[in-house]
Amino acid sequence: MNCQLCQKESDAYHSGNLSEGLRMQVEMHLEHCRDCSESFQLWAIADVVMEAEKAVKSNPFLVTRIMAGIEEMEHEGATRLRIPAYQKVLKPILISASLAAAIFIGVFVGSTYLPTGTVQRIPVELSYMNDAALESVDLYSQL
Image (cartoon, rainbow, N blue to C red):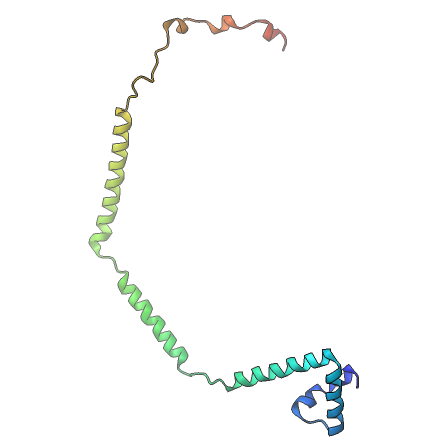
């Protein structure tokens, strides 16, 4: 028996509808052909999985219970997130007041800070110096 014939008869072999002689030939081929035996093993595993899936019974009220739980959680979340009216007004006022205080303190501290000893006075002679007279005219002639 060759692989094509074995593959052709695979459905009948799994369902048990083969004659005794043909069944023996398929089994002999499966013992010697690695590819065909692997495909038959996969087929058998798939059959087991499908039968197990068919045996599982679903609960008809599962969807209803899940939806009721979701609605209950949404209702609890809506009541839990309700913010009192005084917090709606008080929170923006406190944020604005703290921001204004931070700006005021920053300006006040910045204007009162005078570093001592780091400021040096420029000599008066430097203010009278003419920088244009110090530059060489030769620099401009090369352009």
